[in-house]
Length: 372
Image 1 (cartoon, rainbow, N blue to C red):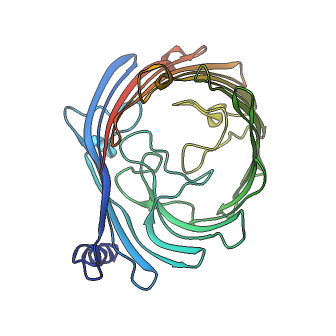
Image 2: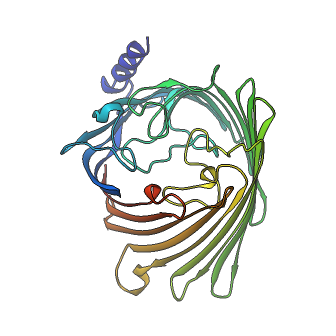
């Protein structure tokens, strides 16, 4: 049935029945070296092509194909580039109708969603994509209300990257609200009904302001997750970030603490997770029970000193968990925009597991993105 719907959508867009369609997307070349006992290499070429129809009585449609194709033998170690059995991926990732009325939007079909526990997490070649019904309302000034029912998921954090598969026993219901009516302050709260016994709630606040030499941000977050058999986990966290405009530096710090019942680990659920203390590979979800995680980061905008559109960042996080679990992650990221629509990102990570050395690894990834 979905193939027929996709075919109708594609015709709706490409036959140009109601005006000019809009085509956009990106081409992406990715390489990866992952060293964990053995050395593994991957190189892939792919991207996204999206066609959006013009509006017809406040309704528009869109389809988008995502692809990742190995340029050499696929190992698929580290960050996943391909599907199961290291197969290439070509996926109808978006296929939806979107209707708008005043400040309310309704989207039905395969789509991109970004919420705390369900997000795109675009760290590889194929991001997370969702088959859902989503309603977003901005009727009230400085407020946003979000409702979504997700039935299936594909992408990097899904059970199968290459195919949409069911999540939750009966799908997932999400309700969220955000408010920015107070100067410099943002508040948001979210609720997830994942199945009969699995629920999650998330709350976050941020305050941003300026000082003599730049700007600063402070934030707080809290999450509570409940599961079957009286198991639960909660997380609280704080963060701060300060910019110095003259030196083009940004210093950031974050701390998260987990508290569990019956040794229940925190979950990111359907994405990379919302937690302040997160690295390129590890997050609060990797604590596995009670513990804490500290994050320190420094970024430098080299554009300020002549190297236009060049950003450097360095970060380190430390995980302390039960049974003397100790793990650290060092990340170094370089981002360079060659032109407005052409950019390069390079990420090097060094993970050190103090107790299980076989779990330690080094990972290097580089992506070239061309937007069109």
